Length: 85
Image 1 (tube, rainbow, N blue to C red):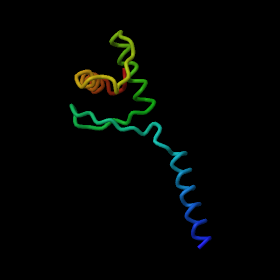
Image 2 (cartoon, rainbow, N blue to C red):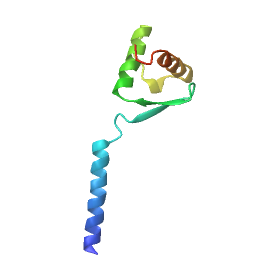
Image 3 (spheres, one colour):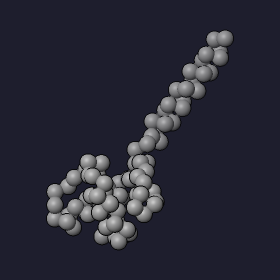
Image 4 (cartoon, one colour):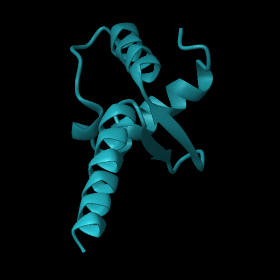
């Protein structure tokens, strides 16, 4: 019984460590309902998104704080700028 508990605890610990190492950092997927596709929101997308605000000559705003129309504007711009600039 003791060895089963030990095996299960090591398995749980190993799985937790594996998740922590691979994590979900940089693995956020955002659904673009206007173009019916998904985008990985990672460092590259963040750089492109900051470029979007730079092109607009407006202060940066967090994507998740934008209303639906503002998010649509970003995805329209994004699809017109697939390389990011």
